[in-house]
Image (cartoon, rainbow, N blue to C red):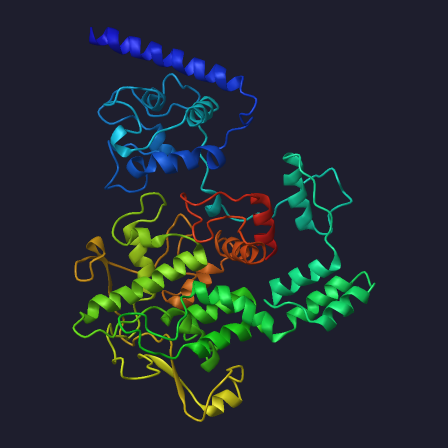
Length: 515
């Protein structure tokens, strides 16, 4: 009787799958080619990875859908059942589960409050029928130079970026808007680059200039102004959680504005991105370190600091290190490492051990969780850099305002005694488990200790390794968002499995390769 019921279930599954496949083949709106990254991974990440993804502790039945080996493996406690059998939807238990109405058998289970739409089921079935080919997550694939797309209207593009935009428009049956008048073009240009409207004199000059390069000349003029650096610094200060107060409780004052002035100066002097980031991550550790490069490390000290009496010093020190870790990972790598502080990441290939290995880079600072009190104005918690009037007149001439008194700014300076780093159970500061050492997730790029030092300077080198798939993509996406209001990847802080896919992936990689 049991064998009969099982055979009937298999037959029903085959019939259902054939019906879905037939329906899909007759759906003219269905994509011709199903790819894992574009069509399947977003569904699995949203509906399945919580129980069948990277987090070993949350995984149900030992079945994984985030890896090819896990998806193709023999199911637990089974002799001949597989979750996915490439090319065979009738032999794939996953199909039986997602099409079942049995509350004890169906997937996702009712208690998850998740469900698959008919279109999502069709996509998964078509993908399995086509071979169920897995792909590395798009943002972890090394950047390769994109070829310029073919377009119908060769007369429209002014530069190569236009070709990518037009190619996508042509697939949607859209046509470009006609070019705006010069007044609006100039207004947009100045707001984008300076954050200010053009003057009457600049408008008159531009309108009367018939030179074919009149627009380029105005771009150069706007870039040469001090306001360019101020405008560009705004988004970076947001990313770096900049403030001239401590944030907790009474929000006591502190002095971080010299770091802000350094950021403005870096944009105005057109520092390349490698220099810009290396100074901020490790300006105290580079061979050519000086007061300017050390000042740049204030990037890592912009976090909140408590001045509340009675707090546990070590608890808040650990919070500051976590803040630096999270800001680095989300701001510079667009990865949500913070999700792995207490447990393995449920969606991305970042283990809790990976989190604390990254944490170790920022854990060597000789700092306290509580320093000073709110009665002390312009407080700079150690370690700090003292800026003198002589510095202002020479190396740090970009600092905007300073009276005759010296200024102290919080910066990075590692302790002479290496502090051990431990994996913290559930992220609790005093629940120490195994000791860990500086490293980064292998899924992004292995941290090769023969190439990089095990400190923040080595971390900066790892970021700018040509094989790092994230660094350039993340920054060009941030810049795109600054000028167009929305990134090519809409989730600028999440290039992981839960983030949005790029609207123009080839353009993103073309820009990243060029950058």
